[in-house]
Amino acid sequence: MCCIPQRLGQMDIYKGVVSLATGAGAIYLLYKAIKAGIKCQPPLCTTSPICIARLAIERERHGRDSGELRRLLNSLECKQDVYAKSMILHSITRCVYLLESEASACTNDDIALVGSMLDDKDNSVKIQALNTLKAFSGIRKFRLKIQEHSIKVLELISTIWDSELHIAGLRLLNNMPLPDFVHPQLRRVMPALMEILQSDYILAQVQAIRLLSNLAQKNDLLYDILNCQVQSNFLNLFQSTQPGSLLFEVLVFAERLSEGRSSPHYRAVKWHYNEQSVHEALFGDDSRLADRLLALVIHPEEDVQIQACKVIVSLQCPPEVGVLPSCPPSHSCFNNGE
Image 1 (tube, rainbow, N blue to C red):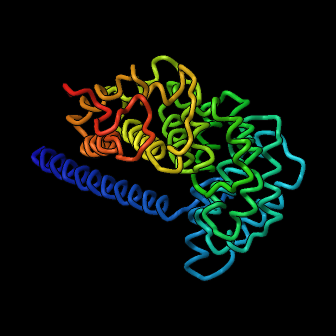
Image 2 (cartoon, rainbow, N blue to C red):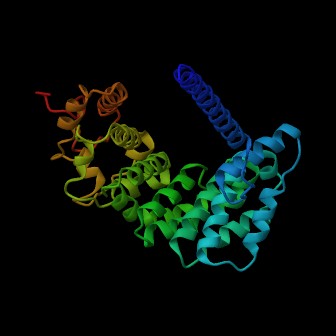
């Protein structure tokens, strides 16, 4: 009987040792499983951007051509449904950015193939095609070929009211110089660009105003911009409550218009403007632009402050003869009290 407690004690110790061993074994097995999971990589899915990135890095490391971009372009030539075309174009865009050598090895025929997708009936395919063309536009040798699609892009922007399409199309146009043969089409779509600018979608607005700012530097388009009709609340774009990114671009636009209309070349002609034109909204006798600019001088964002000051300086009247009635000689375009 005296041995029973001793044996029970030994059994408890044995159980504890077994428990510890079992716990250690479980932990070890868990560690092995986690380690194996980390090392394990799923099979390459070539339509996945992550897999394409991994592929690009591996091929770049070994100096080999993956053939991924060519495979995708070849598959785009085959008859595909809307979803497949959108996914292929999306993957091509990723490849162009990631596989620089393979993208540079593409041809103008490849650009034409992507450009043909702009005629697709589905907007999602059009948007992906615009994104792909923008990716290719970063390669200098393709820019002339991509410029051939400029008129089509402007047509899409002006006839389809889709914010994502506007953003994709305008980003493409802003990423390359526009040839002179596009200027007549630009005149026709100017009202649509102004409508996008006065919409409530910030990303589209920023892209639209960037394009308009670039066009304002073209002598043969300046009057078309200044005489373009806008809404009565156009100056709301200059309110301090607007996002800083949009405010800055709008102020750049105003500065370029101000400098353009003050140039000797432009002032040599007596222009006439519509009552609800950009010119009257910004530079007309009843314009309240000065009030908005003075409020922006104390804007929290420094780049907005600086740009507002640049617009104010540009509004000072030049000494040339033949100044507009709204800006008498030797006086500022601001009122005396301001």
